[in-house]
Length: 166
Ligand code: ADP
Image 1 (cartoon, rainbow, N blue to C red):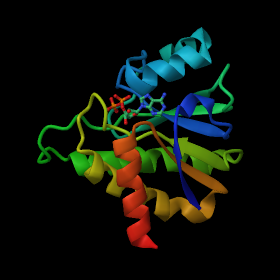
Image 2: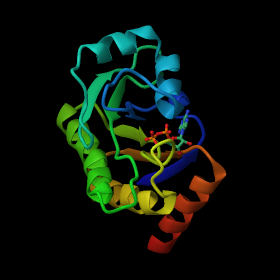
Image 3: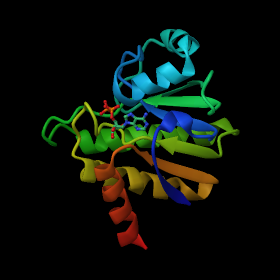
């Protein structure tokens, strides 16, 4: 069951929210900044224990002050025109999150932001098609998979892709 929820991912009551982080895992802007602000300084302290997170991979931490118990940080690609393996890397970022979540045992409800579509510049409809495709591949393994969209344009794109699939 893939749900589209429009709003702030830091408010969602799920087992894990996904962070669109950067390779340093030292916090940043956009959804990354919002997650660190809401989780509190202990999140950064835990992230500092990791050497980093190469693009396409993922790292699990606690959620601290978030309603979500866990944060799974992943790093999507920076859009460089589309011929630098961006699609494969974006797919790998989503898949890496699911691999961690499936292996964890206590993550049954998970929410994703639209990875790479903010500062990283990935065209949002292409990114949404990949995001929803990987979510569908993992649908049977989770009680809830939430695509958390922030802006109206991204919400429209996600809704139209899901509507085409019905
Ligand atoms: P990236 O660097 O991977 O592009 P951004 O954080 O810049 O990541 O943007 C990714 C997406 O997250 C964008 O669609 C942006 O609008 C959205 N976003 C920003 N803040 C939040 C939030 N608090 N909750 C959910 N989505 C958010």
